[in-house]
Image (tube, rainbow, N blue to C red; front, side, top):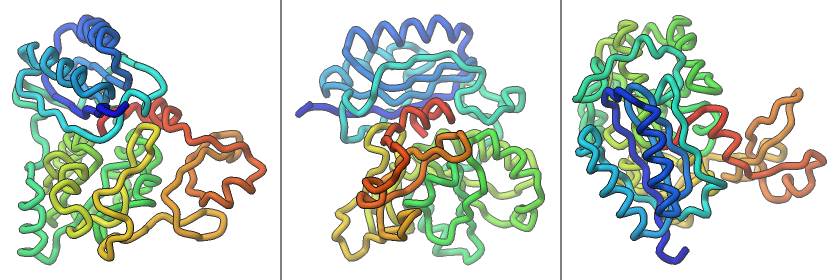
Length: 306
């Protein structure tokens, strides 16, 4: 689509009838020819949809006409409906599946007890003014293989459900008195993660407003971010500046030969399909059929906007 775009958005707000919201969103997207993933829960909505620019604008206008979503921010990204295999609109217990719906408290202002929001500029200022700032990755560990903040801690998690046991393992207790900047793709996972960390004794927790996506838009290859950003659609990764830029740092390495790559493929491991990084040559030579199927990841972790 020459005029295609992708919209990313989320909003934490109490919803009395998530099922009705789901039906409305399904009908609206079908009418406008949008594809993507939308999750609705009693605590809000999380979505990534793609289509023609005019249809995306119409979707944004119609969605904001619903009072609880009136001030919901939308982020634009390059792409189209073709970046998604289908339209999926579902009702879940959680907007982001951490497995603890009873812990999250939400009011009309959003998540209660979450970390302090920082703009990209404020993130850099904090890191420059203090030498004990810790960047804490709020994504799945495989996402960090192709990009992360400099010297960030990457928890050993496969899905967001793993964060609870990871936080309670004692691994990070020495960080509880340090300034911690949580980050994820679009900010939504950190809305919940930061509140879970705060309730578990982390005293100074921040989150990047708009996530990696907004930080990358501001600083491209010249900030504290290194590498590429994993995304939950058929693109599977995106860069904020040219790869031939001397400030761009390639982080991804082929699992088989170590060559630089950002390309994830599915590989069978013990009867389970897992995402691994393979260069083009190793993917072509592999005896295991591989497929760049980010929809598998979407189902496994229920993320839409990140």
